[in-house]
Image 1: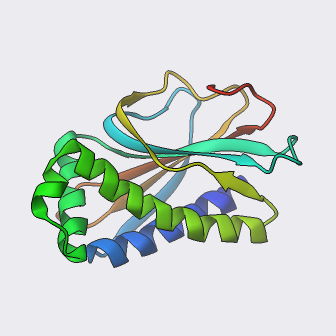
Image 2: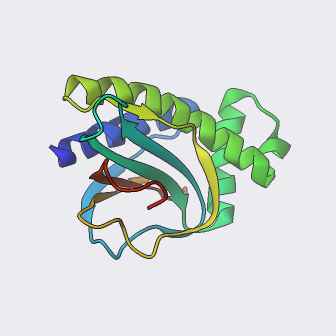
Amino acid sequence: MFHRLAEILGRHAATVFKTMSGLEPDRLEIIEAEENEGPRYPLGVKVDFHSLKDRPEELAGFFVCAFKTSEAAKEIASVIAGKLGLSGALAKSERGVDDILGEFLNIVIGLTCSDWADHGLITEFEPPQPLINCQFDSFPPLAKAYHLTMSSLGHPDVSIFLVFFNGNLSEGQ
């Protein structure tokens, strides 16, 4: 079940990325990540999600769109900005990168939320939050984690870490 939900997120991320950047992802790899393999990248955008308040026994989690270097994030943001007709200077500033990647993820969230509901996981997504030097020492206990890597020829990879955990865990874990 979780792998299927990861595939849905990956498929929508690749489709939206192609639309917003004009780049064709030539590879989308989805692997189950070990608990100690949390994202350790210099720049990323995090999206938290949780089940509806009347179903607290359901799962919660988050996903992080991350880049190996800040320059890689700026390059991808610049490509998206160019395709959308936005100022190139916007994609060169940290705030601009956050805004552009946040907009990318907002569209991914909308599509993913609908498909996840069709598969029985009804969730509420929080708005994307920028993360500088995102590091997670480990995923929460009993978490199921997936690492999605999107590659486009000649451009930096886009990494997405998707983590599911029990919705009863305390906030902030």
